[in-house]
Amino acid sequence: MNKLNISGSKCVHCGACTAACKGGALKMEAESWTISYNELLCTNCSACVKACPSRALSLQAQIRRTYVSGKNLPQVYENR
Image (cartoon, rainbow, N blue to C red):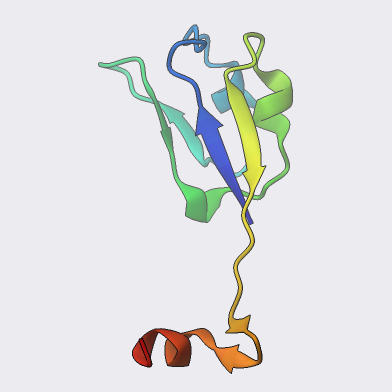
């Protein structure tokens, strides 16, 4: 799973990313002209990143671990 970073200072609010997003994860808010992002709808295809003319979007890899040193994560946190 990746995390989408949106640079507010680089974004020109053109809507290219929202048009490229096939999953509907990105939406342009009509009143504020800001981009909203729904992580659950994102397919990690990076079409939005490629479509952005101002390079305001980037994907950052996130590693989700369920085990640490052979222990289940909930057990690790319970034993702290």
